[in-house]
Length: 496
Image (tube, rainbow, N blue to C red; front, side, top):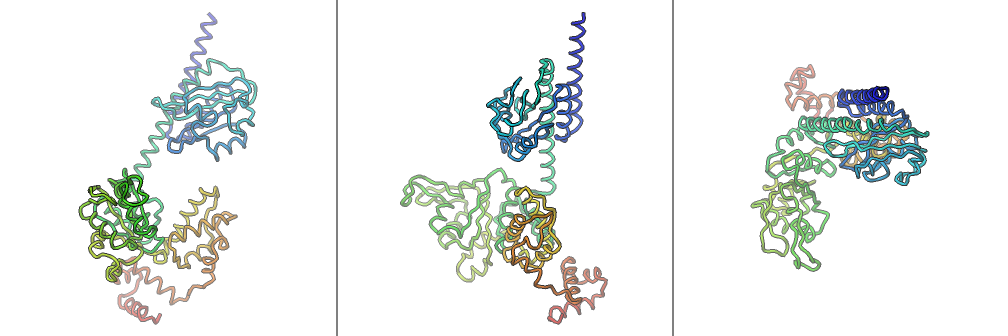
């Protein structure tokens, strides 16, 4: 009778524990919050002090230690900074082979713990169980004891059963996160790396949003380093073509014969060294986008071949007589004024008009200085992750120098400057001395802060905000139109 009563009590306890975990995993969609709570409950009913729950990033094959308790600092640092890969060490093996592992004594001595930090952890008992959702391993649950441990098989059964609701919570959380990211992308568009607050760049991005799914060719014009390829990628990866390739080639990086082979491909025997057939970038980009950078460097002969392709989407590989037809959107970029190249006879006029159906002109960074502070903030965040630093801001002196510098290399130069500054930084903020010497020197070059200069810059900025309308600008400045006209005339005459 007592045996039946004991069995009933144990069964009730099992059901109570599982019910408690089920309630925990259903109360939130924030994965770390859920798994923190679950691990506490698991360790309590297992009467163990240490443990870890991993999830799996199937894109990188990393084992992510989302939550852990009472592990050595060395092991925690190793797991978080040098993530275990799927198939590596004990937890990676459990995930890869969907196999439970229970070690009752001297666990750290088991050869399946291949990491030095795990071998030095001094684990005596170890239980590692795969966490599954829809027959796919989505994580690993580990219960650890550094002291001798008396395993209760009934509790191990509960632990196995607990992996089911944990797996469901991981799957739901990941689905929620994916949906949230997709919703955010639909709302804001994914213009990753493009930081803009200036009117000029916001106008460019507004036009980009309009042309995303228009099949017409695009010509992007701007100085080197202004972000022409970023804009081209923004067009492609937000369009209906995003599931197909985005391929890029710099037309000035290769001699004419190699550029032709790279773009159009060739057949075996077309020239010395052509031992096999080669697919060109145009063919490889089928259904997607081909980005031609520094287009002005393309030879006249190759311009003819590109023009023919743009007219009927058909081309011939080098050494072949069989036409190839593909659907590829062409986005071209130049850092020169192509109309001048046409007038000089260096660029075909008919190709220019084929390419220049939709034109995007990217402003130089010195022409949108209000974008410098947010760009610096973006790059600080980017390089904090790369260099494992925690720089919070740029100092006022560093910002002043950056705003006063001309940036001949545009955004690319700014990015390189901040990367260098982040390497040098030893404090929570980037200092003037962390910047390259030529940029830091801009702070000493002096700025005209006379009342006339300040007034002129303020009026011109307000006029820009007003879209060039003097009437609107006068209202914003609280000036009558005649006074504003007089001041603008003085500026244009160079008297102020």
